Image (cartoon, rainbow, N blue to C red; front, top):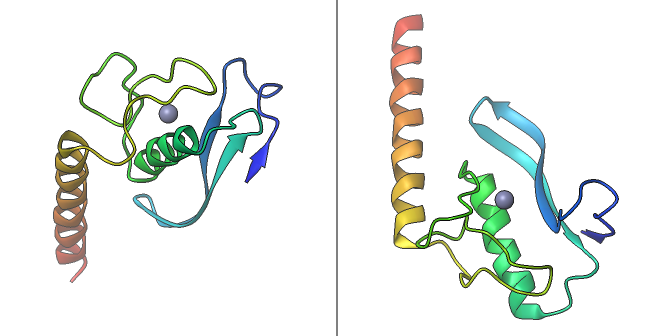
Length: 111
Ligand SMILES: [Zn+2]
């Protein structure tokens, strides 16, 4: 969804919003909002990749150089990444398997 976001928080250019959770770690419905001022397609793709990272549980990492979660210089300048990096994928895998392991052990405790 595209809309005016600067009234919500200064320098907010996009955000990920979960609408429905299956459990604490499983989002079943979410939206990504982009500021209208984003005009360049490649920048929009960069924001999309970053916000999808939030959907996978990644946090902003403004000063990092190897992640799609790094800082955006301005509303029409991408952060240099257009998809998850190897570092992002590694972190997502670690978070996913940690959750699966926790879920399996929680379930094992209920039987
Ligand atoms: Zn972010």
